[in-house]
Length: 253
Length: 328
Figure: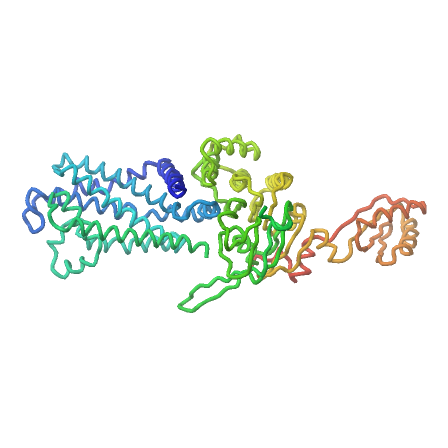
């Protein structure tokens, strides 16, 4: 009970923080919108190539875009935490009886909420572009993006707590996000890739997330892709969140 | 009920060693090397030392922010290694960085802080209003903390530390960076808290602050406590005070000198025309006697000043260097 109450307090605090400058929430929508307007049309003519059935290019591209938003949107939240470490806010929280994990739960849940809002907005914008997704499959896909967002946010927080400086955080996050996104077939399906690249992508957990996301949007729900994607992302999220809590506890060592 | 004796803090052989790895090599830094200290209930305890002496590290251990490497701590009646939760409910801590949320208003900061201590919404609101009144923050409590002046921000920081009405408040360098006026104001606030029965444990590197504010001072250097006592005791340990007497003429001064020499055998006296400098132990006790003696012999001093050794002198004596030169 106390944990839930603490998480609620921390969540509200962080949401208030985001709402003080809501412009940034929408600014991060700019990139996915550009992809939607300026990149997705290119795919229409590619329809019919392996992995891009004609007439389904939108349903292939949009779920990838969702994963990209979840990956990048939450990857840089650690900067905000460094701010709080530097101004002593985190220390102040740690001296109160507040549950340690609530400090991080409150943040990742905020990050997940922001992502959820963005996913919904992008979906609405994509409908006039011909997006045709079953509503229930869309709903099922949402927890997947939420888990990806929590995974990336936790990782970002863990690095922030470890480094405590922006100088080290920025290059680390960049080094991780670029290969992770290239190797997950976000923009184009990996079925287009040479075999070695396809094999390389198999070690990237997020490629399974993209597969699951696409299976839901295209309605190919019969195969194992969805379950595999959810399980892998769930495990990764658990590991990352656990790691971030360990890093938070290290402050007290 | 859980209190043991009159000590609100009692540490035994408290140690903190930081271990880091530099190029794969284990690197140990002993920040605190065995601190024994006792703090009385209700006093203002000053922890004095240069930067890097172990002040903040000790204070962070006391406030549950750092786990001691070894040693025991009994604080607000609880064992630090066992009852962190209870300790957190009974102490307040204000770090040097402050810790207020710059984007939130002072009021919002106070509400969240109260709720983190388990107060319900209504109580938290009343509590925040009381603190705003007590720390005279009415004129700025509704503005974001990021817009505050240094003095205003400090008031908010201390108010946050006092949110749950703790019996012990730990302040890390509470007036560093403040202008003299804000510093004096903060001293007044700290004294007011003491009057309310709150024990204050503060670190500082300002001698004047320690002297004016603290009932007891401990000086820490290189991770160990070098000396401890009331400011007066510490200054007395230096040796003599100086009493300066001014007379109407050098003639009178010369006669007074002879009488004083006869009666204060321990004193060293130097005469400069019509002014006498007496080096004497326990100067404030001696002044009334000096005046009485001069009076009975019909000499009247035109001026009298007593100067005590400063804490700077104390620091110099015990550490072998002046606190002001610790900037390197």
